[in-house]
Image (cartoon, rainbow over all chains, first blue to last red; front, side, top):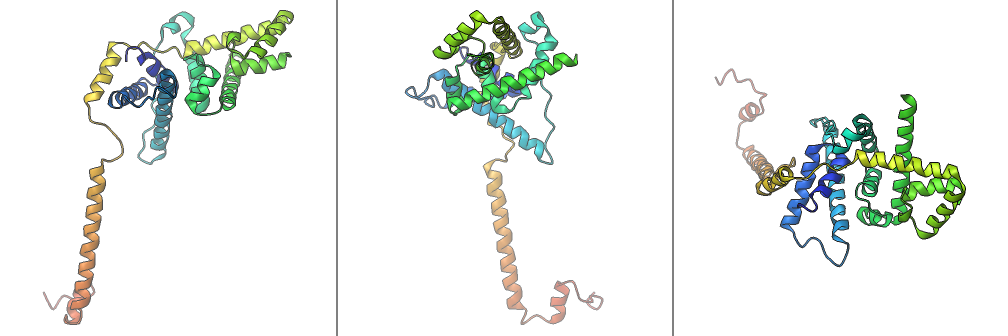
Length: 161
Length: 133
């Protein structure tokens, strides 16, 4: 848990922007690993790739559940993203990074995951494809769209200010 | 490689040329040696990636977070979907209601031959009950 905790919670937190959601995903992942230690098959994918796949699927499931809850008449409104400062925020302009985080979370879910895997997890396009269960070309297209949209958003923001 | 192709490749592979496929990386390096604007494009893209990377810096994972996971191990699973016993109980109540309705219907159709019309009318709520009370 010490070795992979930061990876698991980091991806979940960057995906949702909410500490409580990140904690839920982290707990679900580690409880699953605890109860089903044989879930990872050594011959198939590297452990880290498999673990990222599990986390990515949990993040997508959680996002789906939240959408469903908002759709239902008795559903709750979505919690706003936490503005928890990171160590980097203090050094490089917290507002700008918080704004960048909001823009990243505005991306479609699969594009967001592809970008997070590239930037935060430093995964190659082939590894991202394996984690997301898509072809390498499809993973590249997700990355191209995510980066293009994000750059446009940031440039628009700069020209607006 | 043209500038446009270089820009597209940056979007596909990112700013770290060592992560690019070998052919594209060699072409990009040749372009970078001859085109100062391509160098500027690379620097701008690297700055963009640093901003994104800073925005998604993972928070620390320490004893508090490990404690939460360990505590969750002992907790029964929480779900917004009702427990299976809810569905079993609902199905049981529904089946009983159908059975009771069926038995009542049978009893009424069999008894209808013997029961006076006033009583059936009373059961149906359409009779004048003043005389009975």
